[in-house]
Amino acid sequence: MRRAVDAAERARGRTSPNPWVGAVVVPSSGKGAVEGATAPPGGPHAEIAALTAAAEGARGGTLYVTLEPCAHQGRTPACTGAIIEAGIRRVVVAVEDPDPLVSGRGLAALRSAGLKVDLGVASELVDEQLVAYFKHRRTGRPWVVLKLAATLDGRIAAPDGTSQWITGEAARHDAHRLRARADAVMVGAGTVRADDPALTVRLPPDDPFFRGPDAQPLRVVLGRAPAGAALQPALELAGDLADILDDLGSRGIVQVLVEGGAGVAHAFHRARLVDRYVLYLAPALFGGDDARPLFAGSGASTLGQLWRGRVRSVTNLEGDLRVELSAVDG
Image (cartoon, rainbow, N blue to C red):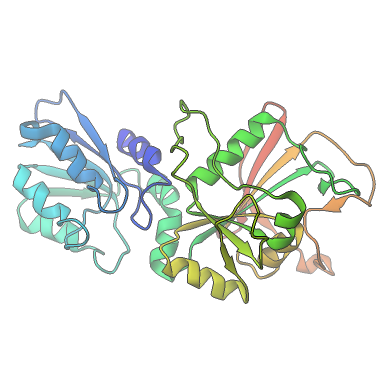
């Protein structure tokens, strides 16, 4: 199953609105296992890719798959039918698919055909890997990741507005991987006017998240961006943030990366619309109160109103710290 999880991770950022799924077929001999991962929309699901690679070796074998196989006709035929026809004897599934079109039907179809089905193997690992997809299926909204880069005293830019670069190359490389995993990248119109970011994924070809220059996330601007801005063409939206997330979800956006600026970060945080915070902290200090803070706007007025989260991971990126946070129950 771990091999299937790794295959799914390599497909991440290319499959939305479909989930990024990995599958491995182990022949009855136990030798010559092959894997597959979900292709972009319209292409084969992970199970079909693995079965195709296994060919006749699938007969009598075991299929490991990170998410429950579908049992309905969508852009492609149902995976359960292909699994049964291939002669698979046993199917090991990490988690059930919450999509109302699946939601246990795939497992039931396989069991009805006489296959042995095991559910729950590496479920915690896959629950985390597919957390954005699960939210989208259950709420219709994308998973929101807020990315911030700051000094250790919580400042994102100097008083004169300069901010490039607070963090080092390794942290910036990691941030591009965040973009590669997102379906959309969002900034405020003020950031566009001040910094003119391109918001593209720029990774070397040997990086596992390299997608090519044409496979870029949707650029989203809160407000109006200049016609000649580097991120154009972009989707320009305005209004209530919750309504904007509903709009993006209806467009098949499963994960959105919010990159700033401080006003946009404050608005998302204040509305409690952030699912994960990713902070890149440089070992540097402005040493005063005149540099620009992470959030622009009023915060908690008393200690009892303080937002408290849970540190999910801390990673040293060649001197900078990458801190991932979620709400206590997130």
